[in-house]
Length: 146
Image 1: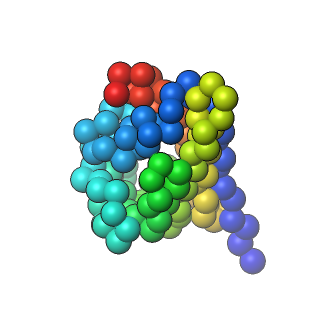
Image 2: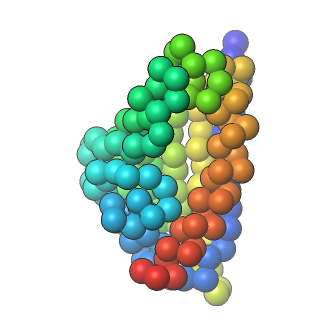
């Protein structure tokens, strides 16, 4: 039986939850910390992220909003990659969950990217683990301007 792993990043950002929420859910702000997209914060909305193609993967991440409870919970599917890419760009069918909790001095941000099936997604897991940490830092920088 295959093992499934998750990337979890947690950080307190010095901004109110509604400002972080806008940064997570406004397409024009999302592009500043993640990728070009056509996101809308509506359950059932299907959207894509675009990045550089890798091998047989076209660089498109297909997503769907699964939960949206402003300003505390956002969850969406994250599907992309190609079966023919054994490393970065391997087929990935996963879920990204954002939880925002007001705390003294700002908002506790928790991001969980779950569904990395091992060993097939090991390379993607290893590459994306530090990447998500940098992305949460970038959210803070974008929120400062929002």
